[in-house]
Amino acid sequence: MKHHLIRYTTKPERADENERLVRAVFKELQEKAPEGVRYMTWRSSAGTFVHLVEMETEKHAGIIPGLAAFEAFQDGIKERCIEPPHRDAMTVVGHYRMLDKG
View 1 (tube, rainbow, N blue to C red):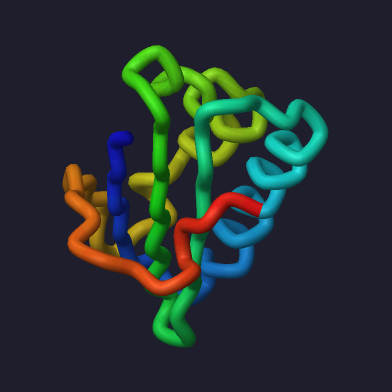
View 2 (view 1 turned 45 degrees about the vertical axis):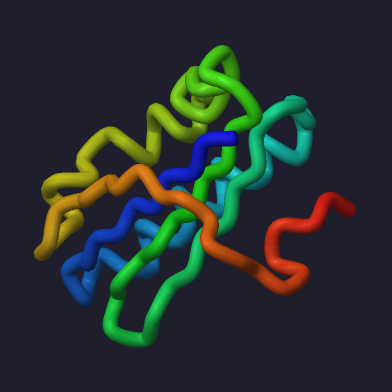
């Protein structure tokens, strides 16, 4: 399993637009229902977005970037942000019911 945490802060006037674009990614994921990937996004009141991506194997790494909605989300991301996206590879130390399948 590979886990990535991506975080960034949008300009206040662009946060709703960013959320709309992120929601479109989730809509496309729901429609296509790909296996091997799990994805969650949080938004703070300050316009900080945090994405958690879990991939079963390296072959699943292209699933989200291959979505049309994700391409639309990526288009202009730098212009929407105050703090640009930063990605960290993460190791799960522990969790309680957060990553359970179901």
